[in-house]
Each structure stands twice: as structure tokens, then as C-alpha cells.
View (cartoon, rainbow, N blue to C red):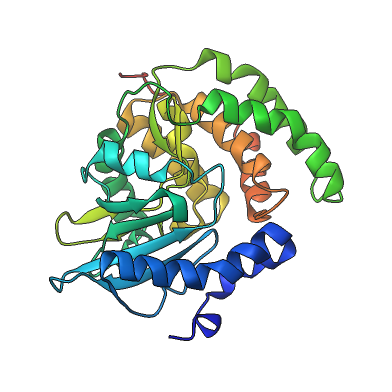
Length: 302
């Protein structure tokens, strides 16, 4: 296969740095080496990609798998450890790992339809059942902690916003920094979190109806784990939908609405500037800020 013609367009942003260009040059060789190592029959890569290349494959026994070669990054460095801890309970199974090549051999989801396609109502019911299974109490090692990650956002958010040309109003930065000053040191029980659990990172499967993929693991309180779902555009991108998700999830899971709202503001603003920035996140932050403390709070059931 001519890999130079097969790399998904979503990886093009890596051309902007020497490190990224070096990885793009290297990844075809890494894929071929992994295919030989695990005796894989490769198909064409999945078209969606941003920080890794995922290639459907067949194992020697004819069963399906996925070869994933990662662009090394702070957010994905402990993906294999999270999958091992979950051990297939609500998430795909890790079949093998090659740390030197940043390569994972993963269970393949068939038919693999994203949860976003099921509609918001069905999706939220699925997630309410999945999330408690994923939120395993655990010590931080080897995972990065939410406290450390949020401190990192706070330390450079304003400077990144300045360098990006002030793409949105300063009041959003102020609100995010206020949340980041108050939340990290007052967290509840620390559990394993998937900090990018949007509608395309849960796929239909056969072993279980729905399985989570692509964890960017952190250890922190449960309220933060709702942030990617609340702002997921695949479940509806408008103020009413965002606030409906906030209210439904915190109520159904017995969590603190105000903490979930503020965590979503903080992460949404932090992810609105810099590499991989999502401008739509700033609009979501505005809706959440305007919602204030709201009228509904969960009970922090643990």
C-alpha cells in the first residue's frame, strides 16, 4: 500500500512542526513494522485522524483488529494503561502494545457506528450507563492528574490567548481562570476519566452494544468527566442542548451541577486556543457562563 497516499487529511496539521513532519515521514515504516510483528493483514486507514493513525486489520485467525500508531503526546501517553485497567468493561480491549513505536493493537468495533448517530436522547441514556463503569477509583500513577492538567491550563491560558490574537473576549479567559483557581483543590473522589468522551469516541460493537475508544486519561473528580459530553457538537450545538445535557447528566448521575458547569467552562476555554483549537468551544463557554449557578444541583452521590 502506498502510505503517502493513504494518510488522512486530519493529520496535516503535523506539517507545522519539525517533530510532526518527522513523525509523518516515519509512520509508514512504523505501520509496516507493526504489521510484520503482529502478522496483520492491513486495510485502508480510517479517514478520521488527528493525533494518531488507525488502520483496520485482520489477525492471523481472521478476526478483526485495529492497529493504532500514535503521534506521541501528553494526552495520549497513558492510553494503553487506561485500557488495561478497564479490561474491556465498557471500553475496547487492548490486545497488544509496542511502547517503542507508540503502537497499540486494539479490539475492532463492528459495525462501529458512532454514538452521535443514535441521537441525543439515546446517547445520553447509553452514557449514563457507561460512565460509572469507567470511573474506577485509582491512584494517579501512571496517569496525569486533573489537578496538574488544570494547573497547566491556568499557567499559560492568558498568554496563549494573547498569542492567538485574542480570538474571543477576555471575559471568557477570566471566567475560566476563576474556575481553575477554585476547582482543583476542592475535588471529590479521584477516579479514572476519559477527557475526550464525545459522540465519535463511543462505537457500536458486538461484544457489548457500545464501547468507548480513544481515551485521553486523567485522574480527577467525576464532574469533570461530563465536560466533553456537555460540549459535544455531535449531540447538538445550541444553548438549549448544551444546558439540557448538563442538567440531565448531573441529575441522572447524582453529581454537582455547578462543578460540572465550571469544569466545562474551564476546559472549553483552554481548548479554544493553541494547537488543535476548537473555536466552537468558546461559544459553548458563553452559554455555560450565562447559565450561572442555575436551579438544579446533583447530590454528589458517591
